Image 1 (cartoon, rainbow, N blue to C red):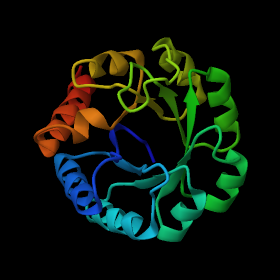
Image 2 (tube, helix red, strand yellow):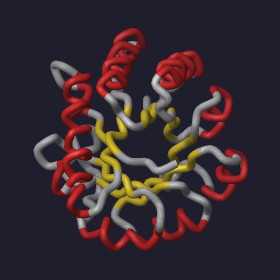
Image 3 (tube, helix red, strand yellow):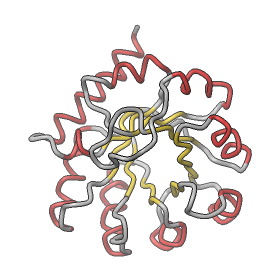
Length: 204
């Protein structure tokens, strides 16, 4: 699968009904993938409800940090950080499902992740992030340097509609967004606006 476009990550604050409503709006707006990330609060019922929404739109549903939950709920893949278990073991257990890896500001980590079977790698924080204010900053040059890895490159951290074009220019294939999507007054419209950035870039 070629991961490209707006990669939505679920916000922490919403209760389940509000979360499902927000995600439904994001899907209506045309997100390319959804990652379920609720630190310490992820549960199987919520995961299955989100998966059902994604299935209706044929959008990949990826679970953050929790391989067991991803397998149990039937997700399309899992995304792992440096403390979330071995990528090679996850690859073996996932079979053909998606495996993503957080590589922060490290090209070496991205190389190792791809060698271990990652289908895509994420770099960030590419800008100061409201959800992770202490996160390490990833230079935009990483995206051109990582082109040779041959997998989709995801940018994450502090992304807005205004600064997103810089990342596409730098070589990012997908933009992982939380706040600037789900805090919008009209989530579907914000998702559509991100989609236009990718279409515009493709036609240049």
